[in-house]
Image 1 (cartoon, helix red, strand yellow):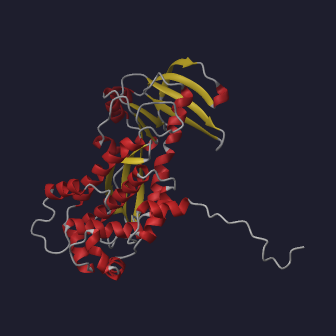
Image 2 (cartoon, rainbow, N blue to C red):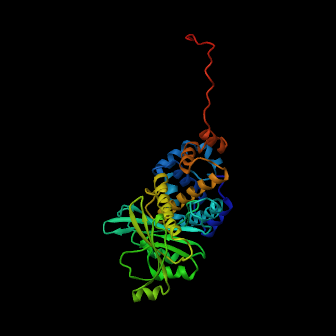
Length: 378
């Protein structure tokens, strides 16, 4: 917890009057309790209460100031604005991104690369009536824009399950000279033209029904898997009105999965194989979703209101980014999973944090067996 910028956290609390006239858990206590739940994978509010009370003598030194109880934590989840924790997660993200800016990603490209996608978290409609997805099913979607270098989320929007992925493009402010890699769910030429006007590049997998007219064909090296590289324009009058300039269409055969993929991009300078590798990097956002669903608590929730759900998701993101910050600051070799497992067992141990990980990576050395007292020496 010493790696958390407490001054910035208090600024986020004050911005939304988080602790104003609230008796019970403060926002800081709530963050620590739910951070403990994420790091140790607690299952319920009662579980959190029981475990924290078992180490009550150590809570004050960890930063807790309120009495730990299930009811006060439940009230805090309902009353404290989720935007406090969303803003604080952004503070941590801004700390973490420069640490990973030089990480290699297998693509010879200096520009920032973003991968955009969403994941659906199923909910019980009777308990979460605000999260309507289908007639008898509830769900929320976590729309995520991931910085491929470091796999750090830079933008997250939590919506009900009915919100289509493409609508999230309206909330993203494109950065000039950056690349945005998306699946075919985000093919909307009016919105993609906004990216083009902002001098940002996109790589998107095209849909089968889109009518395109070829203008030029460029030479390709088919040994790389690239089948064609063409300059095209939209043939449909309505689509051409929304995106009036030329596009680049690249056909690529993925021999590993025996798939032929077709990409559209507004970048005409990169080699065709680099564009294909950019789309391959989009898989990192899928791995991000898989990791946090497996190792953090974002599929089962401690409250049923929209505020409680968003609070828990944003604190989970904060813990994910915090572990990444610790990994870089302390130059730790273990993976994020290993770090999380060690922390889950040693949260209240009075030892330097580096010692726990030194013991994880150290190799036990055995002295050679002495022959002095060997009765069976032949």
